[in-house]
Image 1 (cartoon, rainbow, N blue to C red):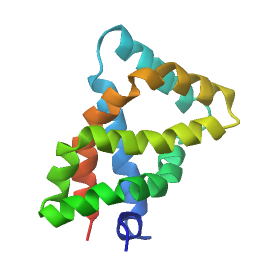
Image 2 (image 1 turned 45 degrees about the vertical axis):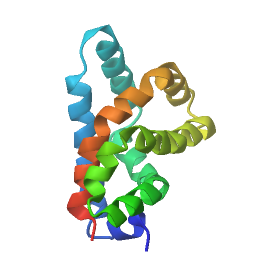
Image 3 (image 1 turned 90 degrees about the horizontal axis):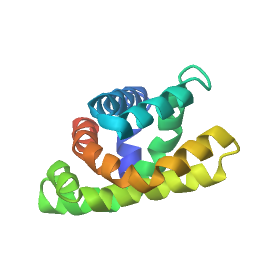
Length: 144
């Protein structure tokens, strides 16, 4: 049984998605400077597309993202500390997550979404790496 099947049970999925959205909000709040302002503005524009837009995106990406990081998690299980393993391999984990979002952005029909993604893609890896420890903790909380 893969990571997404373990995590995305009917009882857990909404809780995990909500915690991931809260993590994204916290990550955004921590960004400073001009790039932080630009990133916050971009997310505000995306949130303006429809109510709960970010939640719906996180919900739709949860299964493919967990599928993509499952091999890394499995290696961590073999080592005995999968949460710490994800954290230690945050670059590789970020690459796996960005592979999913790259595909999603490429296939979106919403020009605003594609434009925002393309604008911030070059700097995305650092932001995703920064979020991996928090994501690893969320996964660890719900993994069986």
